[in-house]
Every structure is written in C-alpha cells, then in structure tokens.
Length: 306
Image (cartoon, rainbow, N blue to C red; front, side, top):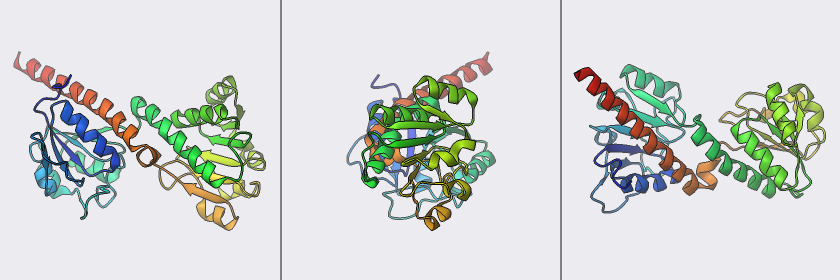
C-alpha cells in the first residue's frame, strides 16, 4: 500500500487547507510531489517546493488543481500563495501530452486550455464517491451556520431543503435527526416520493411560496435561480436562507436584502468547516483514479505493441 504510487510525479498546484492533508497522503503512497502555492512542507526526499508553475508542471504525470479550479482569467485558487498563480497557454505548453489533470469543477477557461493541448481533465466534484462524502461536512457546516444565525433551536424549526440530490438528502436526514420539521422541495416526482418515504414533507416548486410563509430556515442546494423575488415576497419575517449552491447561487440576493431577508451564500463548505475530512476524502479518491489511469495507459501501450 505504501508504494502504490512509487516514483509517480504529481504536481499539487494551489488550494487551501485540504491540500495540506492531501499532500502527506500522496507522499505515504510513494509519489514524487511537486507543490506550489502552499506552505513549505519541510525536508522530505520526495517533495519539491517549486518557485514557478513552469517548474511545477514540467514532466509530471498528474496535476491536481484545487476543487474550485481556475477562474476565467486563469487564476488558480491558492490560499497560501503570496503571488497570483495564473495558468495560461504559456504554462500549459510545458505540460506533457500524457498528463492528466484533476480538478473539482472545470470552468470554461480550464476546459479551453486543456482542449487546446488535448489534455485529459477529470472533474471530481460530481463523482458520487466525492460528492456523497462531501455532503457530510456540507450539511454539518450549513447547520452550524443556521445555529449561529437563528434565535431558535434546530429542534422544532421549520426547515426547508431545496433540491434532493446528494447534499440535499444528507442535509434533510441530519436536520430530521436533530428534531427539525423538514420539508423537501424537489422537481422530480421520484425525489419527492423518496423524500416522503424518508419521512419528510415533499413539495413542488409551485408550493414554494406558501412554504416560505411558515419556514424558519431554507437551505438551497440547487445551482439555478429558485429563490426569486416572487417567492421571497411570500417569506415569513425573520426567514434565514443558507445557499449552498456554487456561486452565484440560487437566490436573488438583492431582492432578499431589499425585503429584509438574511441570505448567506455558502459554497465550498467542506474545505472551510472540515478541511482535514475534505482533504482525506480527496486522498482516498485521487490515488484510485491515478491507478486506473496508469492501468489504462499500460493496457493501451501493451496493446499497441502486439
């Protein structure tokens, strides 16, 4: 187990506290790890603290970008970097053609850069083994925020969960376990049926306005505009909205402010509230994916030689 990635060069570029737990796990597996945009990891024969992106990506087999990836200007999210880390065509030109790039979410700019170099991108955020496990710290973090903001307990609160995917399902279950009265708003009839089976009140989006009239807190997991002015105008005074969807979220925040509704955009909670857990999730998933990529490459090489 300790040498499963022995000698494999991997670049970890930028990131946040999650990567502080990911890198040591990669080292335990025998990988040669190049890092940039993170604190110095000290003396280790298999780690290289790089000064530039060109140095970090040169001749590596795999690149691990932060879960949020890069923005439309190519800037890498790098919490600890004193200078901007920008992934552009010049940097990409130094990446070997067989290199595989891991990222949480690949935005348009990263997809363009990878496509221009014919590089393989693997998006982690939507994989079940990542998303389901990440739903645990997401749910706990959202409930923590609600506890800090609400003048009432979660127990007995009227809590509404918008969306019943991986995060929504975990969130509804944890809220119910704490004694909340949980309503689930879902588009699919199958999701509403599952919500009912699990003991939650199933609602359609046509019922959202009347639901907000009695709700204490709404947790949105839908990455689309679902909490517009029309439904927000129906909200009970003192309603709290915690929007877990990726920016810009699913809430009309301007309308919420004008209506006196506190609405908080809170994407990416795993890395903020439980970075060790989130980092170890990546440390479980990414090595498995690397092994699969190496096996596929070996089979392809052997096949071409027959």
